[in-house]
Amino acid sequence: MRNRPQHVVVVGAGMVGLSTAWFLQREGVQVTVLDREGVAAGSSWGNAGWLAPALTLPLPEPSILTAGVRAALKPASPVYVPLTLDPRLLRFLVGFARHCTPARWGRAMSVFSLANREALDAFADLHDVAEPTRPADPFLTAFASEPDRDVLLGEFAQVAEHGGTVDAELLTGDEVRALEPALADGVTCGVLLRGQRFVNPGRFVHALADAVRRRGGDIVVGAAVEDVVDRGWGVEVQVAGDEPMAADAAVIANGTWIGSLAWRHGVRAVVQAGRGYSFTVQPEQMPRNPVYFPTQRVACTPLGDGFRVAGMMEFRRADAPLDPRRIHAIVDAVAPMLRGVDWEARTDEWVGSRPCTADGLPIVGRTRSPRVHVAGGHGMWGMALGPLTGRLLAAQIVRDETPALLRHLNPLR
Image (cartoon, rainbow, N blue to C red; front, side, top):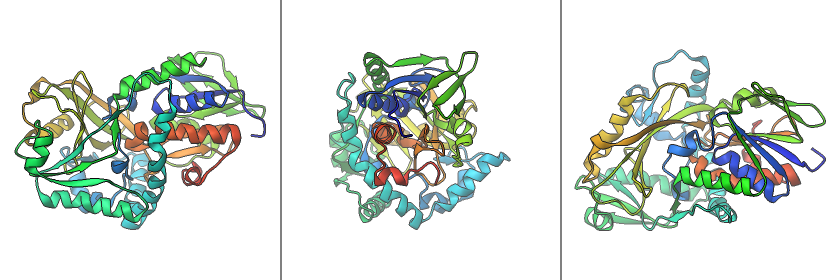
């Protein structure tokens, strides 16, 4: 696109879409954000809210294959794949399995290392967002055994080999419980991580939307986008039941549904719903900071009005109903690790569809059309990498800048 865009339509009012809108505004561009449901209506609401570079890693990892296909078919498994004949899902799963090798994980980790170095700085750029990010001091990971902990330490060693850094300290069971009394006797050891942060995700994304509005941006909810067409002179965004909207460029950032709009523009990567579950409990003693149980793949975060417990990766249709077995699996996994929790009194049970790619890398950048861009496929890390995605993409759209990191995320790869 040779001319500097004056008006860009962003499809999707989640963390990634709104971050892109904010950074486009910083470049002097007028933005209109369209969403079929509302601000933070999808996976931007119910996640753990972690801004944790030490744990922002590629999803296709060798341990998933080590656990075996049979384990993945069990509803209690941290990674669950129901039996299906869905050809699109099967295509994704074959590609995902191909990337669950040490060599391919390492290549993806090298890209994540580049992103993780800049991710927190991009949050600092969002100076007029009223909801703060909070230091996780300390950020604790907890284990039932030292062999379980060794698995995470092995991952950290691999992270270091591929350019990442992790500031970590080993703890005994007594030491980790002294730092977080809500941890139960089922915890026998832990790891303390430094330099991590967290947010209340729903509040943060709504505050980001407020900042976009204050800067003159329009956010239109209830707008179901059916197509994005490159007309040569600009783009035409077709909205169900409304007149087409004309703009100089468009960004498709509608999460799991990116493919429905990006396919015509040459994006062939399958973006699959990796559904995550969460709920809220009220411990007798509220933890002060996030706690992670890596073996169980369960993330816990104090959000002020409750303790959010989140976990699971479920590859199935985005619109499938909440599966109560998955909630029960989370409870069974972490109940021995936390004390003073009435698990039956949980509230805000939620399932959301995180947009996952087979190689574990986001798809960010221009498509075959110079006027149509995409931003998505972040898997579990849309909250942590949303502002960085917006900053990189705005610079490409307005100033035609494509740094090394963005080349690795090419949607046409």
